[in-house]
Amino acid sequence: MPDRPPTRSAAWTAPYARLRLVRNLVARDLRNRYLGSISGLTWALLQPLLLLAIYTVVFVEILKVRWPGTAGAGFVPYLALGLWPWTAFAEGVSRGTVAIHEHAALLSKVALPRALLVLAPVAGSFLVHGLGFIAVLIVLATTGEPIRFAGLPLAFGAYVLLFGFALGLAWLGAALSVFIRDLAIVVTQLLTLWFFLTPIFFARELVPERFAAAMAANPMAAYVDVVRQSLIPGAPDAAAAWLVPCAALLALALGGMLFARLERHFEDFL
Image (cartoon, rainbow, N blue to C red; front, side, top):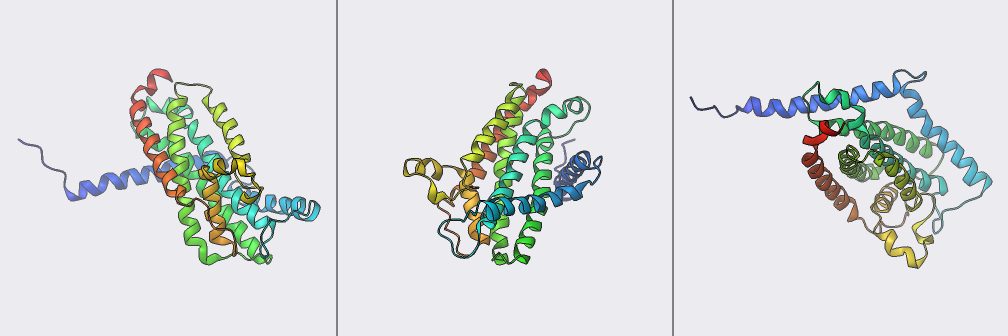
């Protein structure tokens, strides 16, 4: 008797089951990170506000730093709107890179899509830091900084694309780290270098001309520029906004294909 084609309800059940699995994995990741701590998730939301206060004292009150070429917003909004998207990105890539190793015992016991094991810590990082980022925006607005909340949809779109960029790199790192054991350490060092090459603590306009081409090719600089342009009135236009979707799509394609190609060999090397 020939096999029946899948019914419409079955076609809907598979994506729904996978979505529910992603939700459960993200919830499990957050529980493992925060359930045993004294303050739990509260500290993850308070930490950005504490850092914001420290940066305000150090850079504005002590060092008297001003963002060049702006008359409205001060230094702190530019710093905050570059730092928190970067923090979500760096943490997502770092934690996603080691996700397969952390779940090595689970791979031989439970049949589940292994790519979701990488997706969960990346999504958890972006969720927590996204909530902290909203808290920072509210505090900046209440202290008189000219935050343009009408630009939140555009900033949210850039944040979603940044998540895709981080996920693609995490899939790439997770697949390779199974075969290259010290790759996680290398990724941490590369992220530190990348951080200082991204205009977070400094304006793009201060970069010497001989490094301008390299800065223009830095996709994280484009993400930071788009978020700042969305939420800070008078912020400079994003110099290479086209990199925002292109970097996300390229990373997802390359990372996804490499992960799918190598995952069949994971258990042999773990």
